[in-house]
Structures are given as structure tokens and as C-alpha cells.
Amino acid sequence: MFILTACICFFVNCRTAMLGTVVAFMVYKAPDKVFKKLDTKSAVLFAVVLCAMFVFFSQIAKLPTVKYFITEVLRRDVTLTGRQ
Image 1: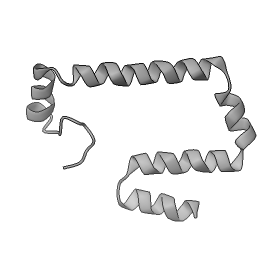
Image 2: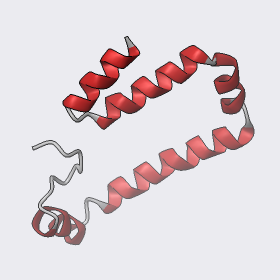
Image 3: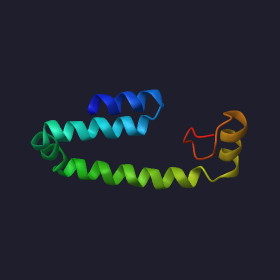
Image 4: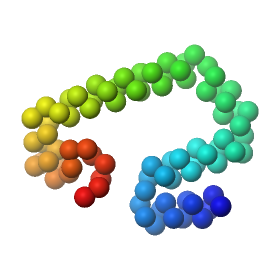
């Protein structure tokens, strides 16, 4: 099932689903090792900092200069999801 899911993710070019599939496979194959790594204070701190960065950068993306750069120079959607 993992190989089938990975192939579908590859052909539809969905990196988010591919990452989720890999993480789910890792948890399935070695749950003790994965949860042991996630149970540390540094892992919790990393997750909190990462979430704070998402909030911070989402506010920066709303600035008019940054919006102009993303839409006109990079020719991308402001959400930067890759969707058209």
C-alpha cells in the first residue's frame, strides 16, 4: 500500500502527501523509536518555534511589497501553494 500511495503522490506531484506517507510509514515500522524522539523537550521546542515562524511569515506575506514580488516577479500565487 505504501508503494502504491508513493507512486500516486509522485505522478500527481503532491509533495505534501508524499511527506505524510513517509511519516506514516516510519511510525508504522518503528513506533517506539519515532515516539521516543518526539518525546523530548527539544522536539517540543522545535515544534513551537516552527509554528511561530509560520505565523510570523504569513504576516510578512501580506505586505504590499512582498505581495508584488511574489505575484509579479516570481509569477506565483500569494499563498505559495503551487496551485493555479
